[in-house]
Image 1 (spheres, rainbow, N blue to C red):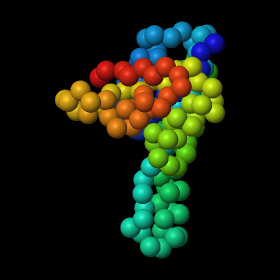
Image 2: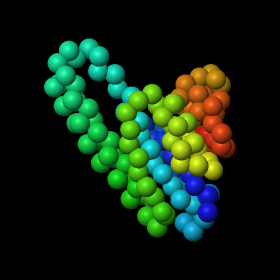
Image 3: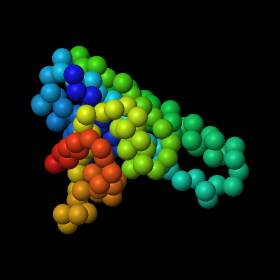
Length: 137
């Protein structure tokens, strides 16, 4: 059974990865982890209570989104994972710690080839120890 990590940023574009999985992998052959990294920097806010409130609010929204997207993969074995940090680094760490076979990401909408990959995706491609699939729009 293949283990697939799917980083999702909440955009409609990033959800194209789910369509790819639905079309390319049978339910019996893969285990999927949907991952979202909260990389929001709140250094402008001086009050720690406000920072904590904003992080908790964001976490609640992200976990709700992940659970909703999990529903799109009905019948598949799906876990969700949420963390705070630098998106590229967190994706690489999770892929190594979880011993994933494959990372599936969606390309950016930018026109230039290098920019179209996206900075997080480019980082993941460079640092990944496993295969990375970049899904076109």
